[in-house]
Image (cartoon, rainbow, N blue to C red; front, side, top):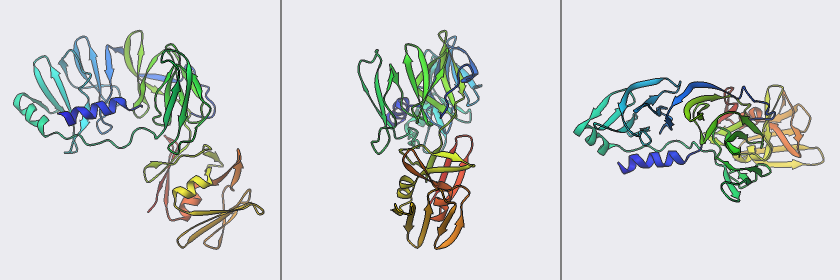
Length: 344
């Protein structure tokens, strides 16, 4: 049981764009109207069921915001989220008015001694990393505006400190920020604030897709957030961090050269006179010249769709060409605007 509940404690701490933050009334839509007394976090992305309380009854909402399974006579659902377990299923432990109940992610219910025996065998499976590896520091009192700074995994300051009452950690490329008392915005990785008007947001941010728990007039619902995403790059599942955000030109994603070459374990050299960057790894090599679509791959001529460029004093290179040059597979998720690189 301790292992089971430790999953909840860990997940409850997790927090869960881009260049033109112009959203106002269209920043979100209600997926589930604010009619609940309480909505709580899913314990796992494997079974994204939100807990809820309404009129003395507790239950679960699915990823579409619809009630699922049966409801229970309970006084509290705060610790009743589903958690992934060793048998590749997720279970919720519910302290009902009639005793202990265990609910399986397929709707199967266990009570009495059967529930107790099942709990004794449960072993929570650690979730894949949900938090982006971004840390924050805040200077000042909790209830007063303060300077809040965000740093990437390499300890680099992402952007100038923001002034806000409080801020959550980054998840899915954004963080929830309380700019003023009960005034909330999304903060993207470029430092842009995107207002989310007329609702209170939970600093744990996103839980499933872009669904977020929101409060209005003392009642809770689920909202689907709409925001322009920053482009992100993941290599073998791990996020690659840059000191200049990736950009898209002519349907091609450009990223800072040094970070992507280092992520791919390639050795990079720069010729300032010819403005040419070269990289090598094993028996593979590539060479690109700034503002020139002509490149070489393993000594053979290649013509790029878009050349390398200098943007904000950073050399930007086409990530697909670079990754494929070193034998990696490259995919693109248009929904999350993520470049997905799989390398050996």
